[in-house]
Length: 171
Image (tube, rainbow, N blue to C red; front, side):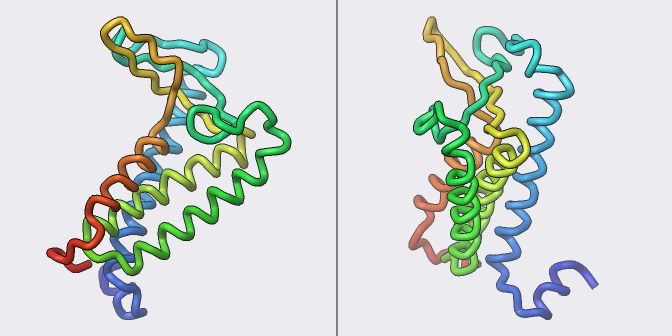
């Protein structure tokens, strides 16, 4: 019996299964990439590693706030509220995925949820989110770094919104 049959026999909706698979894949990719770059390449000590200079650089940034460091600067006071907010956001996205109007939307919501939990795990284990991807181009120096979870949240929510209301591929 496949895992799909196992969950179907227990009444788990197909949309939820798709979302949970996407969720797990993103969570593993996010945590593995953070471990590899921050610990494996020792970015936390090195600070900057040119990859495809000047377009892509690994640049260590500890984000104790939300996007672009907003609400940051007071990690002691914001850590627990941001963890709770991320966990609530994760659960809400998975709940919405259960009722997704199509497969793409279900997967997109799972992707965003995986990113949200990835950043929550960082806050729980490291005290702040490990951001390390920095992209610059054409004499513009981008001061902000981001990570796989940030990409997943942004892209997942964008696709989910764009696919809302489309019933062409039922989940």
